[in-house]
Image (cartoon, rainbow, N blue to C red):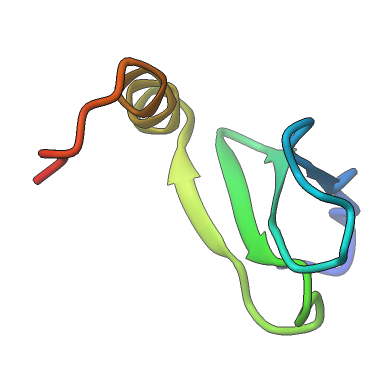
Length: 66
């Protein structure tokens, strides 16, 4: 993450609020995904279309995401 990018990280609305969840943020041309327990560690950068496909498949109950 570069110094001039300050994404607004948020947890899922289904998160239990115990601080142990995955957080996401919109970053230029992608979606950032990080572990809320370790926010200072590097985050995963996923292209926005790929992230939308993943979320769609998860919501549909797909378990064969290979």
